Amino acid sequence: MEIILIAKALHVVGFVSWFAGLFYLGRCLVNHAESDNLSPLEGDAPDAVRNRLKREILHEEYSATEDRVYKIIVNPAMMITWVAGLVMIAWNPGYLQSGTPGWLHLKLLLVVLLVVYQVWTKKKLMQPMQAGERPFTGWQLRLWNEVPTFFLVSVPFIAIFGKVGQLNYLYLTIGVAVFSFMIYRAARAYRAARAS
Image 1 (cartoon, rainbow, N blue to C red):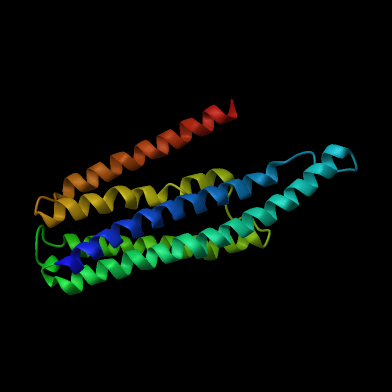
Image 2 (image 1 turned 30 degrees about the vertical axis):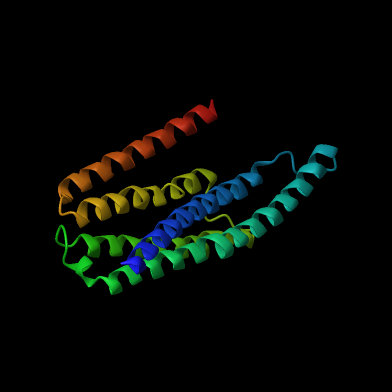
C-alpha cells in the first residue's frame, strides 16, 4: 500500500508541475509574439535603434526561456506524472474495473491528448517562433494557452468522481463546455479591455 501512496503523491507533484510548466511556456510564447509589436523599428532615430536591439534581445531571451521551461519543467513533470500513474495502475489493476465504467480510460485518453498538445506546441509553435516565424498571433497564443485549462478541469473531476462511481458523463460534458465558454468570453473581454 505504501507504493500506491508514494505513487499518488508523485503523481500529484508531477501533474501540478506539468501544468505549471505548460501555462508558463504558453505565457512565454505570448510574450515572445508580442515582442514584435515594438515600434518604431525603421530608421536611425534612437528609439528605432533601441527597439531593434530590444527586439533582438527579447527574441534570444524568450527562445532560451522556452527551451529551459520545456526541458527542465514540462518534460520531466510529464514523465513523473505518467510513470507514477502507470505504477498505480500496475500495483492495483482494480483501478481499471472500479467506479464508473470507463472513467480511467477517459482519463488516460485526455492525458494522451495533453501530451499531443505539449508536443504540438513545441513542434508547431515554439520551434518556428525561435526560428523567427510567427505561426500564431499574440491573441491566438493567448487562446491556445487556455487549452490546458480544459484538461486541468476535466481530469480531476473524472478521477475523483469516476473512482468512487459517481461520474455522470452528461454533467461532465455540460460542465466542461460551460467552463470553456466562460474562459473564451473572459479572454474576449480581456482583449476588448486591452484594446480600449
